[in-house]
Length: 205
Image 1 (cartoon, rainbow, N blue to C red):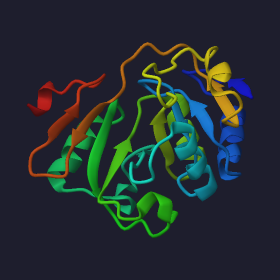
Image 2: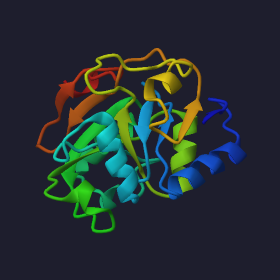
Image 3: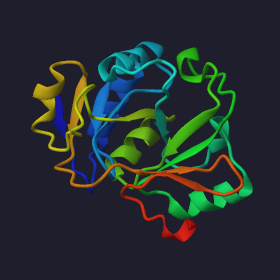
């Protein structure tokens, strides 16, 4: 099913519908400030396993979390004061931050078993942030790309045929023309650029 949500003024009724789908264990495709992502509630084990199957990814290759802000970041990651200052300066924005993982006992074991790091995203996109706020906890984040295909699908009209009923809901937020997020490793004493993408990294070099 495809629903269109206004990217600048997301309709609360539609955002609530997406949140309910996630609470029910649904898997969605949604727009971010970079590319379209595949996601689910981080609390829904069956939905998480479905995304691993869709992506063809091994269970020891974790996905990132999308948060609405940094308020409850300590529930999912250990953040040093220097790392927090960097994150506070860059969010919301097109960055994924690699941090030392907290114990996260409240989440399914598939997400946290032997996990030493966690990727955190706070995208600068009103639809994404509204969904996470309505849900009340993070959603899983991975690009809308199928295994064996290097192309990330950023035109919502092409997504339904590509995924062929593998997801429960597709949110049409318009065509996205950005690169994937910039990945910053903040686990050490100094930040490291793991991948250059949409986010500017000049301020940390």
